[in-house]
Amino acid sequence: MLTVNSLANATDGMTRVALIAHDETKPDLIDFAREHESQLSEYELVATGTTGKRLQEDVGLEVDRKQSGPLGGDLQIGAEVADDRLDGIVFLRDPLRAQPHEPDISALLRICDVHDTALATNLASATFLIEGLAE
Ligand SMILES: O=C(CO)COP(=O)(O)O
Image (cartoon, rainbow, N blue to C red; front, side):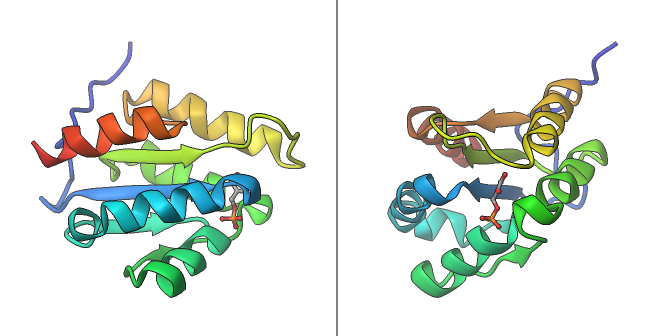
């Protein structure tokens, strides 16, 4: 049976959001983060390694940086989903290029469905997710 995880489930009351992007989609994620910087700065943010570095350096956001995706970062974020620590994930995947760590990516997407955690994999749905979190 699936567990239910509402948009405001944070275990400690603080909204916690993961931001992840593959190399080709990082510019889109950085633009998205700049656009929503004031809202995102209110949240606990977690990101895979290189994405997190860009968010810190290019946008100035405080980010809990995990390993880079190919080195296990997706799995670390998946573990947070399994612990119901995350309220939402924006994961701008590159739909046109295969990734060496595809099994890790699939695992992350799957555990989001198991735990009913909000997951946006493109900019249009990311906008809905971020607007939903603000409500
Ligand atoms: O590969 C990734 C997600 O699958 C992202 O990793 P980086 O943020 O380290 O580039």
